[in-house]
Amino acid sequence: MADPLSLLRQYSMQRKQIIERDNNIIFGEFSWPKTVKTNYIIYGTTKEYYTLECLLYLLKNINLQHPVYVRQAVNDDVPIVRRPDRKELLLYLRGETNSAPSIDKSAPLEMPTQVKRTADDTLEGSHKKPRFDDAASQKLKDQLAMKYGQKPEGSSIGTGILKDLSEELTTNKIAEIKKKMLTHRRTRIKGDPGEDADRAMASFADMESDKTKEIRSRERQWRTRVTILQSNGKIFSKNVMAILNSVKAREEGRNAKPVDHSTLNTRPGITAPSQPPVRYDRYGQEHLQSVPTEGFNIDTTGSYAGQSLKSTLSRLPDINVKQAPLHAAQMNRQTPAVTTVKQMPPPSQKPTKKASRTPIIIIPSAPKSLISMLNAKEILEELKYVSTEDRRAAGAKRENDVLIQRRKEGGLTVPYRIIDNPGRLTNADWERVVAVFVMGQAWQFKGWPFPGGPVEILSKIAGFHLKFTEINLEKNVENWAVTVIQLSRSKRHLDRAALLTFWERLDKHMIKNKPHLRF
Image (cartoon, rainbow, N blue to C red):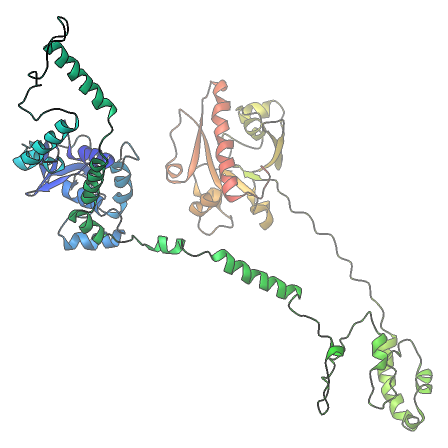
C-alpha cells in the first residue's frame, strides 16, 4: 500500500513534479490532503507525526538555513520540521539512507484518493506538436510533385501519349517502369537547402520564445557566503606569496642595500654625510684603538685584574700622584673584590630519581574477599581462580605487595603492582593507581585522598567487583560505576574468559585516563 512518505521520497529522488491543487497534494494518480499525517514521528513526542505539507515545504526550501526556513514557514502558516529531525529526514527523503529511526511502521495511514485526468491534463503536451495548415500542406505536396515529375494529387500517370512499343512493352508496363525510376530518383536527390533553413529558423524561434525570455529574465546568480569565500574570480596566491617573500627578504637583510659613501659626489658648501657609528664586536678589537678618548690617557685594552696596589699606582700619570691617597683608599675598597673573585664550582646536585611507570592495582584486605594477596597472582596473571584457603594450605606466605607480569601478544610482559594497604602510598604513587577491587562497603575507601568519596574515586580509577554467580550482588555495587566479574564455583575452565574482561576494561581506562603509564 502506498503511503505519502514513501511517495514523497520516490518523487524527490526521481525529481518528478508534485502537484498541489485545492488543498491536495497529488502524486500521479494518488492524492492526499495537505494535512494528512505521515508515519514520521516528531522529535520529543511519542505518537505525533509530521504532516505531508510540512515535509513538502521542507523539500522546497531545502537550501535555506534553518532559522530562515522557520521564519518563512511561520509566515506561510506551515508546520515546521524541528532541528534534530532535519538532518536524518533530508538524508532519507533524498535517498542517501534507506530508513530512519523515527519512522513508525505501525502507524495508521490514511488511504489515498484516485485522481482522474482532466481535459487540461490530456491536452498538456498538445502545444509541443506542430500544427500544419491545410493550405500550406497542400502547397507542400504540390511542390514535391513538381520536383519529382509527378502531377498534383488526383491525377494519374498519363497514358494517353504513350503507345505500345511491342507486345511486351505495353503502355501499362511503360508507366510502371517510369514510376520505379521516379521512386529511385527520390533517394538520390538531396533536400532543398531552403527547407533546412526553415527548420533552423523554426528551432531558433522556439528557443527564443516568450516563455524562454521570461525564464531567463528571472534568473539570478546563486551566491552564498560559501561561494563568496571561494572567490573563483580572484587568485590570492600571487598577493600572499609576494607579501611572504617580502617579509622573508626583510628578515634575511636582502632589502638593506649597502651604501657606497665613496661614490657620493660632494658639492661645495654641502658637508659629506657622517659615517655611521662603529659597531662593537668582541672578536674585532682593532678598530677600537682609533676611538678618541676625549684627551684622557685611558688604556682601553688595559686591566687591573690580578695586580697589586703599588703596580697600579705606578702606572698612573704624574698629575694623579698627588691624589694617590684618595685613589689608594678607593682602590683598597675595590681591588679585593676583583682579586678575590674565583670561579666557584656549581653546588653538587643529587640526580633526580626517575618516576616509576608501573601501574598499581588495589585489592581489599578483608578476609571475605575472593581476591587477596595470597591468590592475586594466580587470578590476574594466570587467569585462574584459586581460593585463599587452598593457597594458605599450600604454604603460601602473605606479602605486603605482589608484582605480577601480564603476558601480552608477541611474548611481551608488562609488570603490575598489587597492594591491599593504600595507606602506604605517596602522592606520586596515587597517580599510578589504575584499578581497585571493591567489596561493596564505603569504609573500604576511608583515608583515600579523594574528598568526593566512592563516586569521585570510581570516576578516576577503574572499579571491579569479583563474585560468584550464585551470590546476590551488593546494593552499593549496583549503584557504583563498577565492572562486575562473575566466576563459577566449580567450572574452572570458564575463569579465563571471565577474567580477560578485567584486562580489556582496564586497557580502555588507561588509554583514556593514564596513557603515560606502561601497559
